[in-house]
View 1 (cartoon, rainbow, N blue to C red):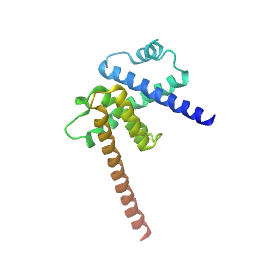
View 2 (tube, rainbow, N blue to C red):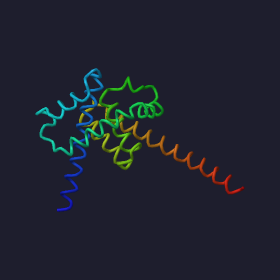
View 3 (cartoon, helix red, strand yellow):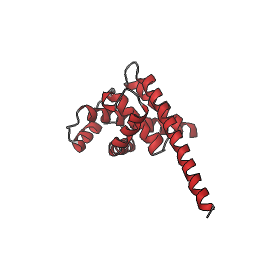
View 4 (cartoon, rainbow, N blue to C red):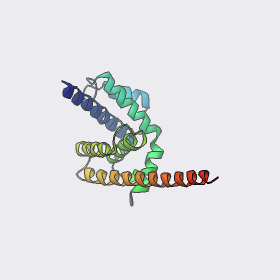
Length: 168
């Protein structure tokens, strides 16, 4: 019984990401739309989310708001790791998936890094172009290396500070 409930929980979380990707893409393509009413309409559309549980919609709304709030910082990381591409040159769905999974896996850390990469590739397979999954996998790998390197330099910097403090 426990396995079924865990599976249902992961399905619900995945579904909330799917909805977040869909709405964020729509907002990306049509940025002039009024946010609150567009989101409400989106969640009530029969062919999209009308039958989804309230907790799925709530989680999706939360992800959407967090990604939008952190969009500049997310794009800054993407710019640092991707050569020859700026976020505005990427396919909208690829950019959206990268932002979402970068946020969950590296900013908020609500998802293990490897799970974030796997989920990003799964979403790319479901919604992206023929090359999206490979592109996103490569970018997510570079993002992982970027954060590993930054964590190493932070540790090294903290060690220097601690060593200088203990010498006094």
